[in-house]
Image 1 (cartoon, rainbow, N blue to C red):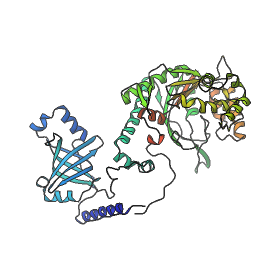
Image 2 (cartoon, rainbow, N blue to C red; image 1 turned 180 degrees about the vertical axis):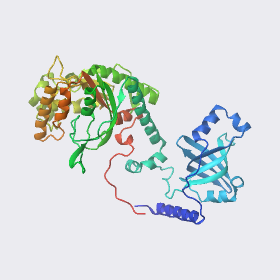
Image 3 (tube, rainbow, N blue to C red; image 1 turned 30 degrees about the vertical axis):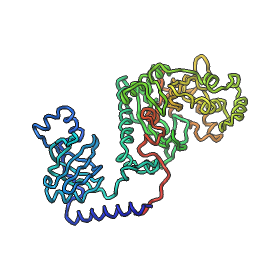
Image 4 (tube, rainbow, N blue to C red; image 1 turned 120 degrees about the horizontal axis):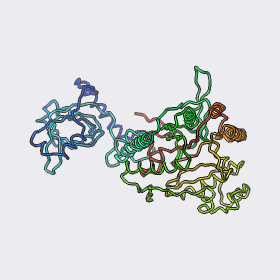
Length: 498
């Protein structure tokens, strides 16, 4: 519900809007043309301010009014566009009676266009002296109060537009997010990768162990799934001869919401023929470090008070060694499922998927090891039974040529040498089908069409997925994934009146 004071402000704004309409003043014109952005003007000031005094150039800028300081027949305002903020000086004798009367009806939050030359105030601040003032869009709702701003996280996420208006740090996060994606794209294109697009609606969801969302296609009369990963389609492209491909994609997983999880998220996936998982580890070190430098200026960053060095090479340690050396699990237990379950019980660690040893091992890893991996660390040698798409190790057949990358206590990437043996892949899928029939909703479906594609032959290949949201959290020092997604999923809010 709105408070009495906010209801009063809203009513006053509506009254002003009605008055302006009655005077036939356009409230939402669409024919205004600017000559410079605010950033352009600031750039001219920084480069050669003497020309502003000598040539008296005229600028036409536009933006949202963020502050008004009135002095009788004049006022200072601050206006902002996408490139910055600028002070303007409004004087009645400059803009005229009609222009100043219009200004008197304007409020913080309104969009305006201003034309004039620049001068310096007594304090030395360059200011635009308005000669013409136009209303470009009337704001009928007041912005949050300046000093209290918009702080409550739920209100910020539900009204992200207000969050972006009031909080410059939030705007900076999303500028950096865009930089991160562009940096990664440029890096991969520079390494001869081809950017592609694959279906977001799939007949069989595959490429990850996750519960999918279901939808229905009316014309085809069939259920479809929102993709949980693009993996199986990207590897079909490698079969087809596109030897280096990547996709920056949206994935959908019907799972819980937390500071690290959102049902809809952004993932980079890339595949390289004639490469191994070790090649991708080296490539990832270079890509992440380069992206960090381009976005933050440094290869060593601070995340939630912890200094993290992103310069490679990063530590590489097997899953078993990590459990023993970091997690405190006896090596003797690593092949003893019941022993591990007893150990978990003593540690009060709840293990729900107890059917396979690999599931127990990875659950213990999640609790005992993952939070301690602050500096970049590759964990390798995952069990075959939790890696249904990964190539078996030639030396230890029970594990795969797979890694997961952890930074700041959370998974950032997952990669492996790809399984390209169709018979082995069919057997892995059949094991997943058994798990699904036993109640594991996240187990893989059988995908006969993908197996058929493998039967035509896929060259030795390595592939990887990188969580863009989590990487953005890391490089913007954001504690929650909701801070780096413009519109995170939330329960519906009760609609207020007014």
